[in-house]
Image 1 (cartoon, helix red, strand yellow):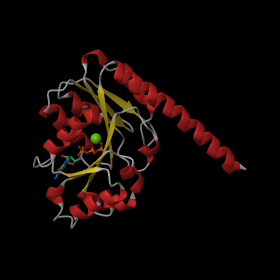
Image 2: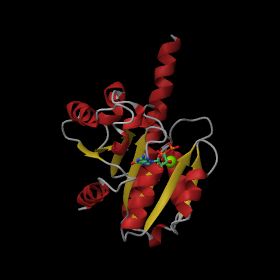
Image 3: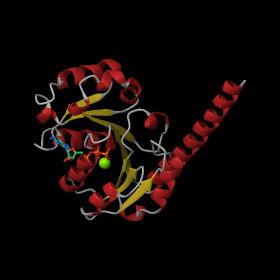
Image 4: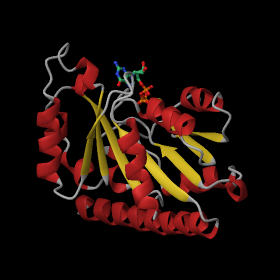
Length: 216
Ligand SMILES: Nc1nc2c(ncn2[C@@H]2O[C@H](COP(=O)(O)OP(=O)(O)OP(=O)(O)O)[C@@H](O)[C@H]2O)c(=O)[nH]1
Ligand SMILES: [Mg+2]
């Protein structure tokens, strides 16, 4: 009996989130803005990648930076002279479309052509919560272990691009980055997988090209 009630509540939450995600997407499209959301493990390199994209492209980018508490990542992004809104989820391990809707309200949408959302570092909770973006990129790194992809299948099945980051550290942590690539391809044959070392500038151009190819 209790389980039935739980399922209904969960379904209502997901339905409400989906409606708000659709509203966010319409808001972005009305303003001719392309939106990418980054999910991934804690410390995998999401903020570093966003900083690189801001520095290496000419797009007018606004950022929604999710953190459980504090505004650490928002503070980092701010230094790149782009508008940024820090979104705190409190105890929650993911952003949702409602929070993102408020964040979009606080960005100067008239003056942007791209919005980048950084989710809270987590490979499980963000899966069910669409935010209204056009594409989702999941970032993991070799330092989490080369079984990370096969252990968290759903986020790789529901993302458009997989970035396997920190390949400069593969040897040091005895991780096989190619295994992570093939695990992702097995889980999602349509997904684009890119190995990167943001420290050494490897893979960044391909990530940017992939985003641009989705903007057409
Ligand atoms: N060696 C190495 N370090 C990297 C690479 N990319 C990022 N880092 C470092 O990894 C650490 C975490 O990077 P962040 O960009 O903060 O990671 P994040 O995914 O945003 O972390 P959270 O928001 O806390 O989940 C930082 O010290 C980065 O400098 C890489 O390719 N190689
Ligand atoms: Mg971050």
